[in-house]
Image 1 (cartoon, rainbow, N blue to C red):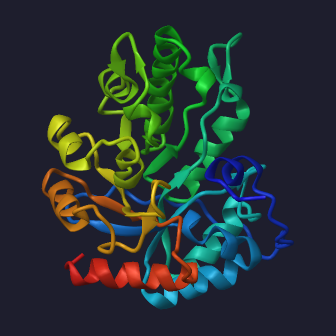
Image 2: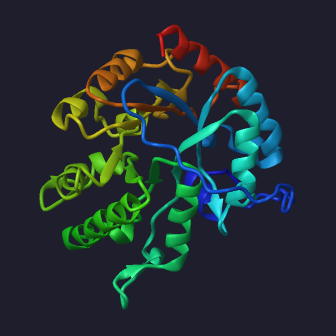
Length: 303
């Protein structure tokens, strides 16, 4: 079965067998980046490698020169099978930091009766703060949460409340777009515009994905100009056309159709401080080899 982002985030079926490998650590936090830029790697780009050998994969990424990563697997209160304390020890030993992470905020994380987040979601936020994250990012909005305008408005209130919850731990809540936000309309407005207009910019980050939006015909340059100052954390993803009539897929930065360096520079100049490299398709190359090339590209840009 093909591994998709949603399946990977929701199931996390990784047989790692690494419990109790590391002692508990004292809690520590990383302050939000102020000035300058940070370049991270979204670990979904090496998802199969992380499934087979997470420690070996992280070691190779560190040896390449990566210093920051963004996780894409938090299941049963564990990151890739490790508790927060164990995973932090792994990252610390490799000189890696994790300023951001992806976990889907779903309907099951909000208790309608109590009008509060479930203990499961509160534990996620607690673990994210322990890891020193600056951002808790939800990378999906289920169709049932956006069937109607009223449905979406209800969850925008919850997004803002999640921003308040994360803010208590010195973090910000964020949402990562796909393509439907730029094609689906509710009350004659694009879902993306409704999200932007109904979330508090001081609490909710829009983690713009430059490649996903392109699938719906939207251009990152236009959105950076339309909503300046809303993107202090974005995914830089280049896209290449597949076989005739088959659409587009991600590729190594600079090898696709997007003016990706121009977009990155524009985002930096408008206030983006955290850039996350993401590539999900590899055109026959090994994923780790692609990540090595991606890092060389951004370094050649001066990042």
